[in-house]
Amino acid sequence: MTCEEFSIKEAAQLTGVSADTLRYYEKAGLLDGISRNVGGHRRFTSTDLNGLRFVVKLRLTGMPIREVRQYVELVRQGDHTMDHRRSMLQSHGDRIRQQMSELSRCLEVVEVKLEMYDLGLRPTDEHDCTKRLASLLEGTK
Amino acid sequence: MTCEEFSIKEAAQLTGVSADTLRYYEKAGLLDGISRNVGGHRRFTSTDLNGLRFVVKLRLTGMPIREVRQYVELVRQGDHTMDHRRSMLQSHGDRIRQQMSELSRCLEVVEVKLEMYDLGLRPTDEHDCTKRLASLLEGTK
DNA sequence: CCTTGACTTGGAGCGCACTCCAAGTTTGTA
DNA sequence: TACAAACTTGGAGTGCGCTCCAAGTCAAGG
Image 1 (tube, rainbow over the protein chains, first blue to last red):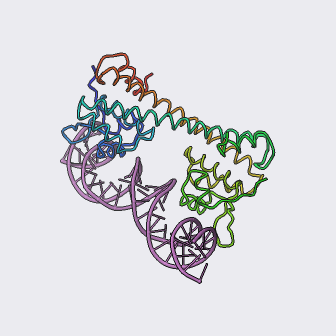
Image 2: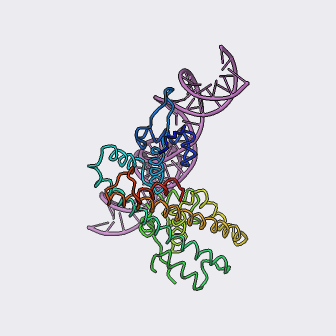
Image 3: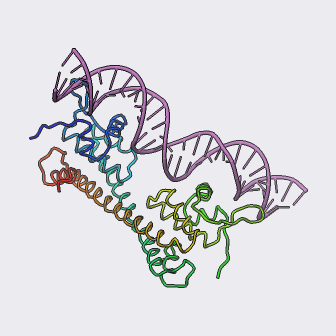
């Protein structure tokens, strides 16, 4: 059992966000119960750090601040909010999968466009891959 | 050969962005040479529409406005900028792939967290999937 | 004790990508 | 020809997520 603690700067380095952002997150209610030493400086425990790392994942996947705050608030309220939290994470998982398939569709378009460049084709050419691009863009498959 | 043309409202519906956004994109240099009818109203050709659809894909995948503008400007400058454009699209493709793998890593975390909820576990439990979550968060694989 | 650097707070400022508004013009239908 | 709906422009406003700043406090080495 480790009881190591970290300054805000260390916490920032360990989670890949800036110290300013950490203060902002705390103020915004995304971080629960970060304790202070006698001088009022924040001390991040490794538990805090893992909570923070999860918050960072939610943010990286586009969950809005206000929704992360709601999730953290539900955690704070205790076990009776588990169903609610689970359904939030389930919807968020769905959103992530949607983002991924959107990205994948767009990537295909970019790759077909690159194929055109590699073949030295203009968009007006009557070529298989030009047509493929057009139909991808029009969404007419 | 079709020579159909579209109003700004129709163009908006056909590409999934608002008419306001279309005007904004034109002002910002993301749309090249949208012509007007006698009364000064925009007329989108299907060529315009496909250019626009490509711009929308770039935006959907997070390319900043200023970079899309640069790409469009290079297109306008003609064939001698093809190498430059190709390399822009190649880097952007790389960025899209990075986004996708980031999303995929984050999705794994969310899914393991959900597994914990389904098993009724708290983050402090000494359980296989709790540990898996912790090591995913710490990135210690 | 003194200094230097890290930390604290509240609040202002910023960059981005829209989004909306006002005032006027054009278009299409009755 | 009258009128509503759709369009035009320039510019202001909005929401988001930080990011920076000033003024002061705290911590650690010499």
